[in-house]
Amino acid sequence: MSYLELRGVSKVYGEGPTEVHALTGVDLSADAGQLVAVMGASGSGKSTLLTIAGSLEEPTSGEVLVGGALLSKMSRNDKARMRRRSIGYVFQDYNLLAGLSAVENVSLPLELDGVAAKKAQSAGMAVLEELGLADRATSFPDELSGGERQRVSIARAVVGERHLLLADEPSGALDSANGEAVMRLVLAACRRGVAAVVVTHEAQLASWADRVVFLRDGRVVDQTEPLSGIEESLLAHGPKQ
Ligand code: ADP
Ligand code: MG
Image (cartoon, rainbow, N blue to C red):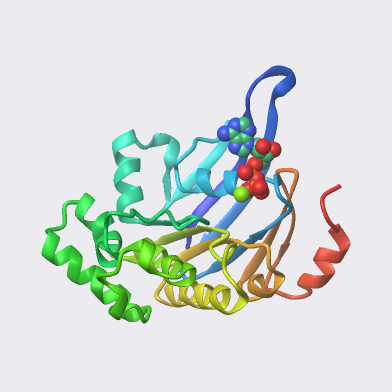
């Protein structure tokens, strides 16, 4: 079953001569347990696609379904609850709160969702342990390396019973060893049944995905499924003109 489904999604920013067609007629789905990589030049609409999939922005036209529910039929409160409970979002710049320790950052979504502080912290601790970060739990973000911060932000995105992981160039600021570690964590989440959509620039990391979606000027130009010949696709489409 597809946990995430975008049907004919378009997004237009602005109006008249300055309008930007960020996405045009995008169809995309991610099944439970599936890792979908999104590639495309800068400005091709990758971040717009993730924010719409995560219900942070509304499409101009088309429909988005999360867990079989149409976002357009959900109230603001329902969407907010769904974001807290079911969707994990990983930002390129980590977005950790500087005043909270690693474990406090990770358990925050649960606390916001009404889970008692103690229970939330032990769930946060369990995820940090899984990600090999138990000894960094009480460290603050500025005491962590870039790779550790990104792992903490992934821990925060998968804590609790998340079903959908959306990651916008999670390895963008990392060296290749840390980038691989991050992809390994995403894959581990998928093995637990999470549907994941990950934006990446690196064909090497995209090659770990079950499917690679290429965006060009807001349109899907290719879907490689299952992964075969990613190089060919890149060569065939070339860089953005
Ligand atoms: P990518 O993540 O692939 O670099 P984006 O989704 O950020 O691409 O942007 C796609 C296009 O939409 C770009 O032309 C960008 O300038 C434009 N865009 C994105 N967000 C906004 C916004 N909030 N207002 C106006 N234009 C935007
Ligand atoms: Mg982007």
